Length: 205
Image 1: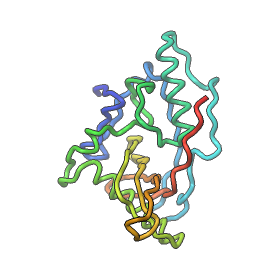
Image 2 (image 1 turned 90 degrees about the vertical axis):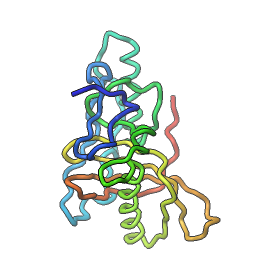
Image 3 (image 1 turned 180 degrees about the vertical axis):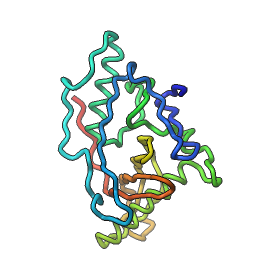
């Protein structure tokens, strides 16, 4: 498998074939998300975030002789947990990774996939399913306006962490609010996990 920059993680092909290019040794990246399978048609995992209750502990990081790699690994591991997978691209992130959550680059989002839709439209469609379920279950009227960014954790059950701008009413004058949606995509089926307003960014120490 070819390695790819974490800023160039592939979302432009079939989602089942996406792979993160990160060299495990270079990044110190670890699997940090543990959602179990969601049964089709089940609400058991709705609004259950596998990151809830997790805290970053530097003692859990792997040790590397290269100080730059060590710092990048620590930054990645801390940021993934503190943002619960919804982190933004940064030059502090590892340059390469073989596994774990990666940022979908601007190119990934704007490139057309199979079916003629762009990566941005693909993740936007999945976010819309989360919004619809959120509205239906909570008697809300959230309207997705546009996708801001997306992260993904590739695999047989690919997880997507989608950040988008929304309005909380039909009024065009309603302020834009940043929202988050998490979904699992598998074999062409989208399983919504949650939809929620984005929390304040973590305070960097």
